[in-house]
Length: 296
Image (cartoon, rainbow, N blue to C red; front, side, top):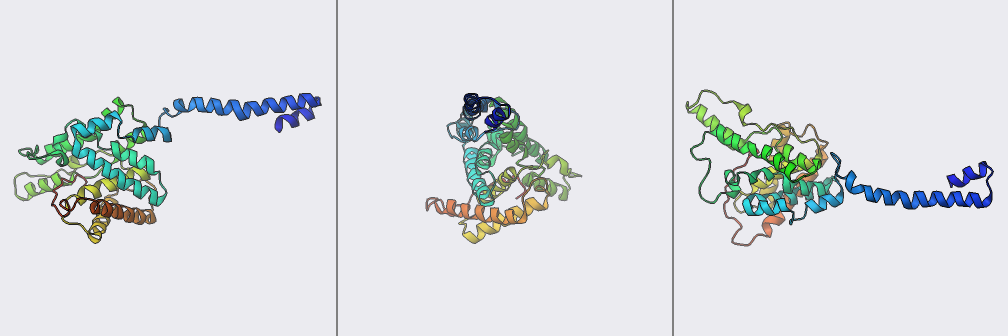
């Protein structure tokens, strides 16, 4: 329409006006969309950019990184899938990017591939932390973040997914070993307890999706220790984990509101209830001891 108007103002003939309009239509309606479609794969690889198609590819359980995770660290793989289910439900409940939350959860613990037996979900009988000082155990556990970032570079994961690896613990304490360190101080075995050595380096979550994965991570790990959980106990557990994370200042850099947190807690509690209800009867009520990194 603009090309035709300009041709009229310029006093061009009717045939020329029609030719200009058709040329503009072909360029704007056909060539530009084709060029955009051709450039999309390149634009999706720019720092910070990730397309829905790329996320769906990463969310396929046939992705080589996830296939290696299920072989080398099956407990971590199972945990990550459950965290993804919780985070996806919570993101959908508050209008966040549910696909990004689920995919980010799948990869958040990728660094545990380097030393899977240091983590309780992959241990069968022997505890790798026996004989280690609490501070050494904490350092070993925290290393899965930096290891995960290295693996993310090797797998060429986009920045939007890598953020889940870097931020899913924020600056939280490695609570289990921090408690053991304080016990040693109280018993007079050591003279000081340096809290900084037991905190993750951060940064704290900077998006709603990463914050939901942090919350889902803590809730799923804690739920594994419940005996015969019911809806009331699951909701109480979720509320407690949410409160702990918020009091620790981990949600200050994201855009989660109190209304979001209430809706997300309800969605996670409901999803946990469905997951436990779907377990075989012989599995319900079986005690599961979990080393909870997030302070539970």
